[in-house]
Length: 242
Image (spheres, rainbow, N blue to C red):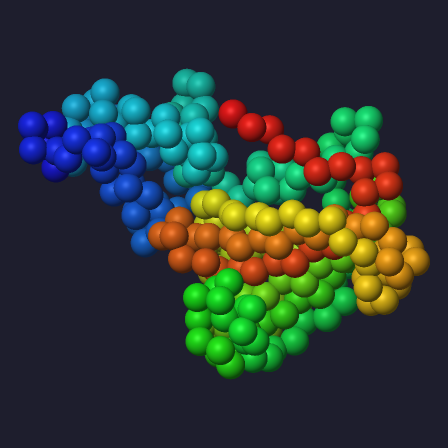
């Protein structure tokens, strides 16, 4: 890799460097908490300028993949609760307070992918999947009922984990070396079905916000399909568009 004139015009060199460095995260060459080599060392390794490396690292820092610590260096981000959770958790109290959710796992079963799960996860219908049902509480109130579907092929040892943590994205990273890089969500207003109503202590037909999310690993593969039903009495979905 060089800074030569042959780099494709539609794909800046720093983006190529970023992709190379992200691949080191995907392959486990750089693990959570690891301090990266200096910009000079990375530049020499890849045959590019320090400025190009700096721009690539800046992009990865903005994506929360890396953390710069003043006077210490640049580190692979740890899957800590706050950083990952609030990067993807968008429900906030109407007064603007960002509450930290608690989760209660109701069920974890192994089954077969139906047509919707197969489409979302890009797997074959009837492939083995895990389904996790849980309720999430904000300020002690049941606010979100959700089902998470995961391909068993990527999470084969999930059954060995006795207690699933509140922040499953940290679990994916720590136990399965799968870092969530982005997620695609679709939002729709609907009414609570009987199961959702029972879990959220509301009446059937009560207005809820339905959120369908597909989460993608750093290599771009879909690894999680999540359906959430949220009551919005006192809460709202907050998105910071930049």
